[in-house]
Image (cartoon, rainbow, N blue to C red; front, side):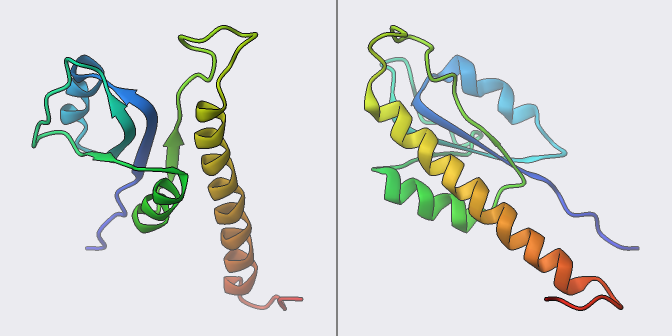
Length: 122
């Protein structure tokens, strides 16, 4: 019997709360990691929840590369902010995710071309 690959979901947040994270423990067919920068006051670390704090954008990029997710969910950039005065901090985090996805898509595209039998990789 061939084992199926378990899809990986990375959730990227600027801030994290317990009531947002608690339902993630019921995910059994997807491996979930929640990457966050800061916490709200009500957050209590829980061993059942796979949450990892990142220090800066470079650290987030390294953690995404190590985890190699199939799916990435980010946060709504305007949630909690004025649409006129969006701080740069959330945009930097979203930019890291965007660049990671672009690089991964390019790498997977090259891999698919090289792995197709009978076709040359030019």
